Structure formats: structure tokens, C-alpha cells
Image (cartoon, rainbow, N blue to C red; front, side):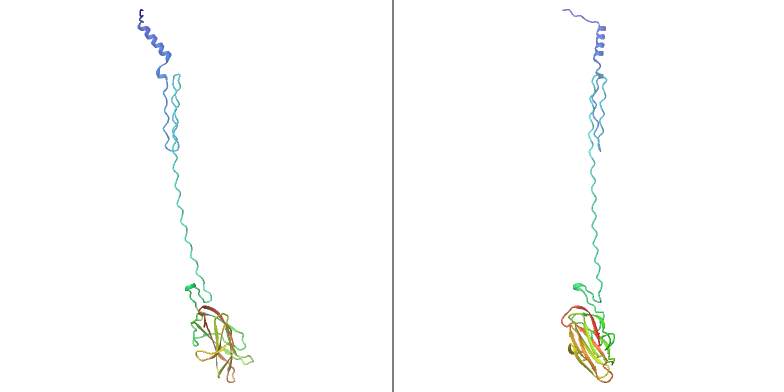
Length: 246
């Protein structure tokens, strides 16, 4: 078989025609890469690939990765509770201070623990209404003394020295000493007794002591009357009201 050789000019024309029909390799698009992932709330979207100039379309770019969420803030610390207020102090009551186990007992008429130191009370005559005075028996060792002038008004009333208290457990005594003449006492209520200074009188516990008073002479039976309040069997702080007459 014989081979035919083409002229160079013919080969050049054939090459150009092939290039025009097939297209240049530069006309095909390259694949675009995705965007970089975001660092905070959301990553930026990747850019799409550039479209090819040739017949085949470029591949779409991938989306960017989503960013991580922020950390939650810590809660505040709770406040401490306030301190409770202290209770108020109890007020006093009629001269008696009650402080519980370590309390004290105050007698408003003290010191009046002897006949010579007796508290002076308002005088009364044998036709007057009864008089009153308040005091406190401060335990077994406390003795309260009062004195008043009982006047015989000589108009038919009988001169009797009478005394009583309104509290239980207390002993009441009345003793008389005539202003003039000799003193004679008869107990209408209570038991006969003599005072430390040897005055005649009568005593009663949880009741009324009454002494009929008779003074010798013609000027009546006016007398100084002494009242004693004590607590022979108990040892408590006992407020009382003394009622007396003549």
C-alpha cells in the first residue's frame, strides 16, 4: 500500500477546525469552594461557583458551617435574711417587778418594818367611812407597819379598830394605844396578841381583825392604832390593799 503525505498547510487547516468544534479546555468552569464556618452566631454562606463559559454548568458552592451559641450567664447570689428584733421589756405593775425566776419584789411603802418606822396613814374617827392604802408583802421575812389616829367623836359611835387585806395568806393585826388614860382592848374578831412594843391588839389570818378600844377617863377613847401585815406561812411577793377604820 502506498502512503500519501499531506502538505503542511493542509495539516494546519485541519487542526484549526478541530479546535473550533471541540472547544478550548479553558472554557470549562472549575468547582467553587464553600465559605469558611462562622465563629459566633452563624457562619457566613459560601460563595457559589462561577458559571462556566462552556456547555457544562459549574458545581454549586457548599454552605458555611453554623457558629456555636454563646454561654449562659451565671445567676446572682441570694441575699441573707435579716436578724429578728428583740422583745420589749415588761412594764412595772403597782410597785411589783416580776422578772420571772430572777425577778425582784418592791414594796412602795418600804421601809416600814417596825412600829417606830410605821407608815403614817390618814386618820379616821369612829363614825367615818373606811380608808384604804396599798402595799406589797415581800416574802416571809417582810413585815409592813402602818399607823393612824382613831378619834372618838363622842356622838354615839363605838370606837373599834378594824383592819383587813384583800389578799390570801397574809396576817393582819391591829394594836391600840390610848392618847389619854389606860388602854383596854377586847378582840371582836381575831385572836388577842401584843405588839413588840407591848401594845394590846388582835390578829387574824385571811380575815378581818377587830379590836374594841376603851380608854379610861372622861375624854373618850381616842387612840393611836398600829396595823401590822405579814406572811407567816408563805414566801411570795403578794400585792395587797389594806382597808381600815375606827
